[in-house]
Amino acid sequence: MDSSTSREMHKLEPLHAMIYFVAEAQEEYAAFGLDNSATGYFPGRAAALGAVPWQVVQATFFGFSPFAVEIGMAGVWDRVSPAQLIDARYRAADKALRRLCGDLVDEPALKEAVELYRAAVADLPFSGRPLYAANAALPWPDEPHLAVWHGQTLAREFRGDGHLAALVAHEISAPQSLVLNGAFAGGGMTRFLKQTRAWSEEQWATATAELVDRGWATVDGELTDAGRRVREDIETKTDELALPMWRRIGDDGCARLREIVRPLVKAVIDGGGLPTAASRRP
Image (cartoon, rainbow, N blue to C red; front, side, top):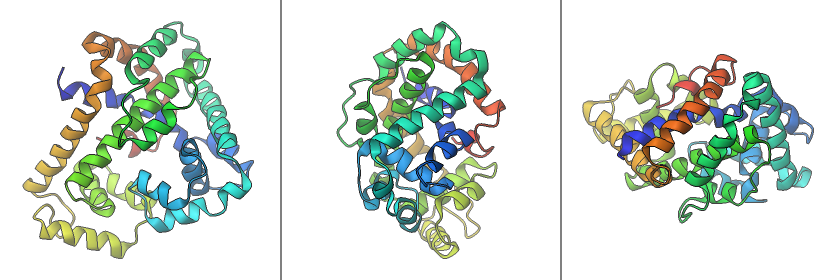
């Protein structure tokens, strides 16, 4: 098995990522006074870590500006407990998957997918992987479609923690990583990242200038050949760091898991569960 398997398995991520955009999540969080996308997203995803301060959230999420995270986490633990938000997120995932995927949530093959996810992502080494570790400590849901969603959440956070390690090893700051990723992915990704990560135009320009000095970008924010090689190297390293989970079930297990879960992913995307740019990330 080589790193291309990780890249293929990463294409299942929309099944997890829809939770950050669907109305069901916003409605659940609004019940606690978290009535916009930022004040729902940050504590909703961070709840598995416990009642941590905003600085821990910014460090583990990495790409978002400190300003955005501080605002998004302001006073949240005075209004709601992490356990309440964890429960709310699962309720939102249940309702959103039922709406977007319809009868697919009742497919008998989902039970097989749950066993494959369990074999792949349960009890992995968690050193240096805080978001994976926090979510891995949560119990698996009983309902197969929610257990599949949980399994994909663990896969996403395990890979994501490794991705941040690769960025740090390359001495790439958060805004620099966004400039690189936007240019690398294309298809409106830069605009999407500017809108959602909340770095100022000045900070974005500074990050671009720093990449120009390193020979990785042009003044227009496009990647040079060297910059594209660096960004591809980071993605390859991320793929490699994610391989331990997929080696557990082998090529056949990975192929079977993709076969079962792809219809759910397609339904999420076709049903508008993700913004267009977010569904095209590398």
